[in-house]
Image 1 (cartoon, one colour):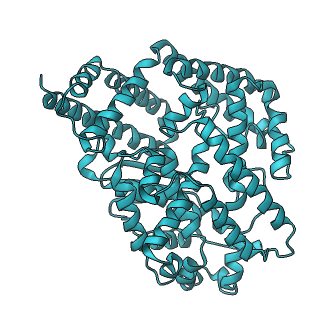
Image 2 (spheres, one colour):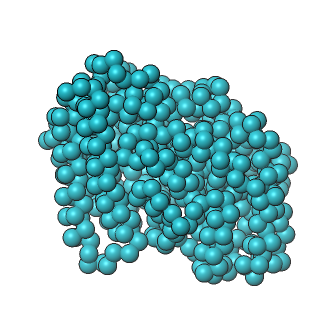
Image 3 (spheres, rainbow, N blue to C red):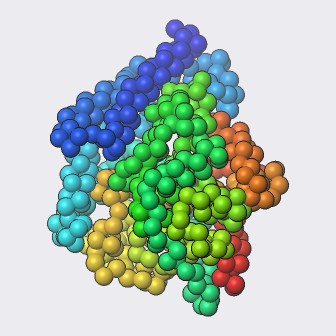
Length: 502
């Protein structure tokens, strides 16, 4: 068999696998949005059957055979060519899938399924003792999985690499250390300011129908194609890309609180724009796939915060907002802008403001890293959590459900996932700064309702690249430098320095 024949086999296998995975994504979206209550048991069996088929396809020995043929030939193009990128990422995925023994994969699946169920019951009643045994089991199995995958420096790297290719704990410790120090300093200055926004203007009546209509109007104006996507209501917002021409957004509404619904829509739209920006001709291959969770998060956080919470954005949309919401008609634009950018240390990550959000992530990163290194025992995790919240944010959870039991990630086995949230903020700020160098002052464009320049720039520089470059290489390709936390630090100091007259 020639290298070209082997590549064609891999291409067809990859695309067929992606079409099967699309059924799973569609079923997952439906389960969150529309499934009848009694349909969950059958849906679980559907998803389990599909997962088994996908695992069999991902570990098919023929993949290894075909990869060996292609990799050993002179036919393959330069490293950044479409074929070379696909082969590189197919190899990476195949090695990952085949390194974990089936016995361990099954045990992990069972433990995380059990863990999520126990967490859902234990968290509301603060039952740490009931949750702790399964959490210990999940971390033990995760350590075993990291050892099976392999790593150069430490276990955490093997886990992190699944979400953020090429990233290491050592890199993150240095970058996050700078971010933590600067953020704590900024937060201290904000606490010392006499200026305080009136956030009660966000707690008035905002009818759901008006929120949905306004949200759709905004995302359409920005560039999200509602004929290639839709917006629905769920308990926990997410974006699901089914495939080309089908990107689903979800949100939740509170009729007595503006921020949750609107900024949830804009955040998920950022993810959705990435999905709609992937090149359809490469669907089902790495070149048609997002490169990392961190880069994905950079898109959602950019549109939510750097665009959606900017003064220029609201100068353009303020007349429409006041028309849609009677409760805003006696509110000034300046007061509203200050309110949506209020900084207030809190216990809950998903409710955190722009300044404090990263501190929530860094605490989780530091704790799970210490757990993986054996520097911290799970028995001591609650106190470590509370101590860091007190040190970084000046708050302490009165109940453990708002402390170490707050997130579902660890019970779901998503260890090494949390850093991607802050990486998204860091990537986003650096990319935004480069976009301004290339396109001119962006906020002035937003004020005129011009969002296409930034969207088109992002599609060319990020979306259309698929998995051609790993995240930090992509960042270098676009901005000319490695990840630099100063872009985010300077943005936060500039914006909130003005708001709080620092």
